[in-house]
Image 1 (cartoon, rainbow, N blue to C red):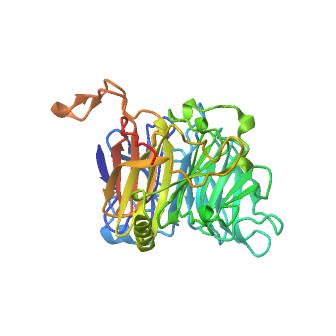
Image 2 (cartoon, helix red, strand yellow):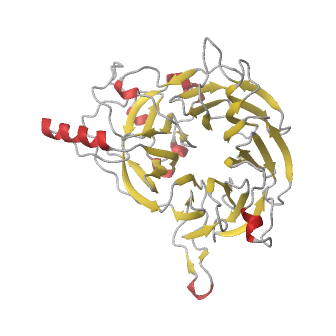
Image 3 (cartoon, rainbow, N blue to C red):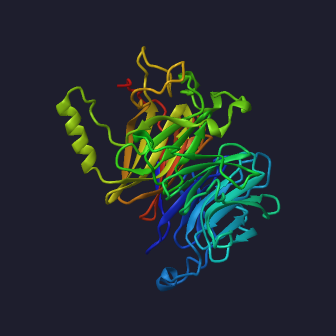
Amino acid sequence: MWTARLDVGRIKCTAAAFSPNADLLAIGSNDGATSMFNPKTGRLVSKLGVAYTKETDLMSMLADNGRGIVMALKFNPAPGVKPRLRVALSDGKVECFDPITGASSGLNVVDGGQTLALDYATDGTCYAAGGVDPTTPGGGGPAVRVYDDKTSKLKMTCTGDATVPGHSNRISCIRFQNSSQLATGSMDGTVKLWSVGSKDPIKTLPSDQTASSIAFEVVGPSIDFDGHYMLVGSARPHKNLLLYGMKTDQSMFCRDGPEHAETDQSMYDMRNYKLVSEIGWRKLAPAKTAAQRMWNRANLASLQKSNILAASFTDGGKIVAGGAMGAGGVVKIFTPNTPPKDAQPVGGDAAGAEPDAMRELFSAVASFSVPSGVMGIDVSRKAIIRKGEKVGEGENAVEAAEDIKMMAVAAANGIVYGIKLPRDLPHHAEL
């Protein structure tokens, strides 16, 4: 639909987030600024936390402004509250802005630390920031810090202990499932699940060392939830997307999108998660002979690591994911496969036995390439343009034939891509 460039010089996009009403798009960058765009047109509206003006000379614009890199940003998702945007900076800060006026209204600082991840609880009452905290017991290390949204004051720090350890490397992703449970991803090769109110994780994934649960590095905002399912994007050579489920009944995966999923909160115990599907970024032909299996193993051995830097569920049960693939970047859209008639339930049979082979429940059906790495993706939860609304300007304006949702792609080359989210995509048969 449109593209927009942040600025000249060395400015790179680092994160993307739509407002809850989809009327604003926030893009973070490596100069510490947050650019606010009109998502309908791609026009720059304002800049937050900026240390220079557009009128300054080129050398001033390229100079170090003393701010950390924007690593993550989130709008408060609660309806009916004053708009609020939290911005996580690599130098250990979390800033709070009014996205309309640009006024700063709160600041959290971890001296000597790093803030690499950020997310709001689904009810907007608190937010969590993660990275490296030098003030934690034992000389510092990875930590999740939970803050009250109204006061911006620290509620608790989650680190684990010797009995139930936390992460051993930087926390690079935080995602709330609801108002009291969240997941964190790290470069230590694990995802940990937490309950707000406890300093120790309640579960670690992978939980064993079987072939289907090898360690995976989470290097960006690539964890998301849809009903009873959790998506994890990782840096693995082939099956970079992992789907965890809470129940063994295949019907629990909602192919019509999260708004149609079950709402029984008693079933949302994160300790019940187990791996139900590994989703291949690159599709390999099914092996029916020993020669084909040998060929597939050779192909897998030659694959380079693909860093999935962003992944999320979207409407209709689809998955959007992207990252750095070699010298460039790719965004892919996955749709649920149509299961065969004799398929056993996801995660095992009715007796609870594990399946003989991990089923691949999704297939890539569309892709979009950019000339540099994909650093952030967000998908609007509401329509950017309503049916019948004018799209374009002047004599080129046309009426939208349907409601249009959008995904925003923030790339390392400093360009933001506003892409119409496809609606009618094919569903492949499960092989």
